[in-house]
Image 1 (tube, one colour):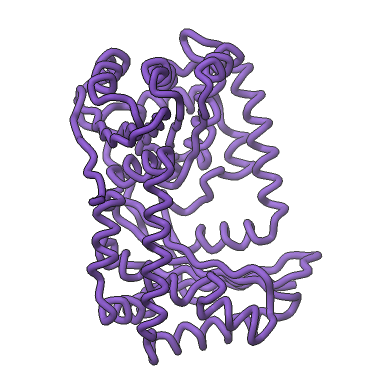
Image 2: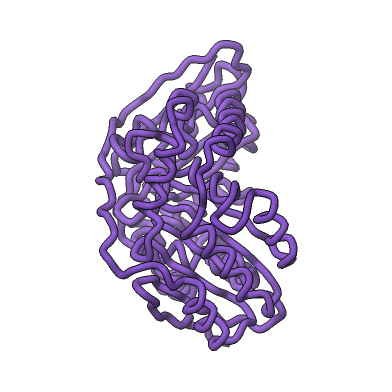
Length: 402
């Protein structure tokens, strides 16, 4: 069966994507381009705004809002990244109208009451302190904060200092400025009929306008080279390497294939080198992150205390060997098969598919069916060339040791 091509339409400037998937459930993802990049002077503001979406609206207090979500019987959540805040809901097809009504209520009418704000701020501060206690989170955050300047140069959750200075009015202004139709994409994936989707969107998302959205803050390059970190009472070594990538969809897909070959799966080069041949550590990871005008590859590994020089050497040797020798045909076949499996899994999950459609539309990345086709069209030579291109990118390596 050929991949499905979702339908697109606009309602008062709001982009809507409808993806029909037969079955009893429908998933909704409302992604707003209002992530940590848009925090301004208050790091963690977008993340705090996400928390406040569930603390009460014009029509519901905190308990009533969550009881209404439970009455609909679905999975109701939200998440904040560097580029966007994604609100999600998965319900039975017959509850689509109620689910969209609740999301619209949160989108338009979230109330920032001082008492609820200060209570939730304590929750977020506890979350930040927990992350600060995790050395792996610490080294990744420090690497990120140095690799970028300006709008991207802080963790999504902010800091204890920035949260302590934050006030309810900051969140109110943030929501008013950024929760507008031109910054949002609504993706619906499931068994609800096209007619019911259009009617529910028209009924509930009727208060926005098609006015232009504020421009995004610029993405600025930070430092490169080696960043040495120290932390008392650390029993492990951590290495995080960040490499800037060209923001081009085809190039990102080719690099993604190469990263799968070099990266952290049990059949991959880095996993075999760090865990099997050298026995250096347990955690190995390799990932891509991107926004509308930036992209970065992140390689990370951990080892025993004092082993960071060996970890660095093994990572360098493994990456350079792959660039020098290339990839065997059977390796590439395995990587393609794994990627086909991931896209097939994505197609089976309505919620994941809705998120991919909404966030891809915001960032300009191809929808899943097009990305899958591009994976199949990417040649062996293009994958090897993409890996060599990656290794020439601006690179920061952060090392944490005792």
